Image 1 (cartoon, chains in turn orange, cyan, red, brown):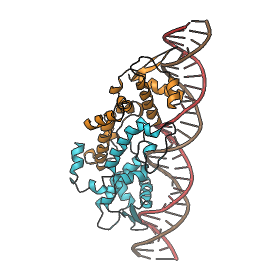
Image 2: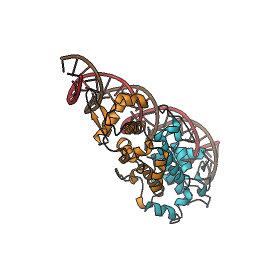
Image 3: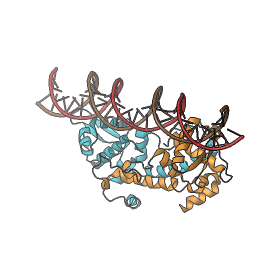
Image 4: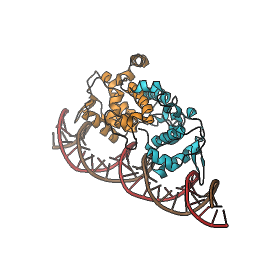
Length: 149
Length: 149
DNA sequence: ACTAAACTCTATCGGCTTAGTAGAGTAATA
DNA sequence: TATTACTCTACTAAGCCGATAGAGTTTAGT
């Protein structure tokens, strides 16, 4: 299960991507209303995405957020890792935060690990192969990407 | 991330599968020692698996556990659903416990949902397509080997 | 029948995470 | 300088996770 927070983050980015190009910003409260996200919670999420260089903000009157990276360079995987942490289903399969399973005798011969490695690969293939832009360009675009992934 | 409990369950089933055929049982404490699982915790897990018809037990002296289902009919997916619940990454993608996302305007056009539907499909393909039997028998599973390399 | 071994079941607990709220602070603009 | 809007830190209620405790029940063997 992905967290509510990650879902909000992705939806907010899709909303920002829709207005990308014309370089005006969107208010947190606009996005919150439009996407039904608690405003104060969204503040934290966008701030987090800003710290990771995904979006930029302008403060004060006429402030707001906009994308920093182009929508076609922001992958679902990147966002998931920022918000929810490692994608891997086991710590011993994580690239960004590897940790050995203490209760497992030998990693190389761990049956559970071997199976979930395949899950991890499949998951990463989808998440790292899909960008925010893929969601707004319609289904055709997405399929094209899927086939080349 | 899969839970510790699910990892224990799968490892215990692999252990039971190794002794399957000769119809003597294994003690909880044997499995616990061999697999480094806290005994009392494993008790709960095996009991749960018993309630779901995966294993059977004999009580009293010379008691223990053994598989009820044949190892090649027990899929990882089945075990995961028993122990950890739905496999789907979003409630609105679950087959066994569908729930609408309350904050999402229209399910059909939800971009996040569309992407994670692909993750769910890929995950289910692996988990429902791999059995406990696939993990034992040594080098038997060439597929898994190839994909994890 | 008695006893020891082993599973059964319910309850409980500390620690952590999740989802969200609160509020004071800072920057930009009119 | 007033207002608007983002920034940052702290806090909290609820729930989950991993594990432990202990009383109860069943069975084998003597």
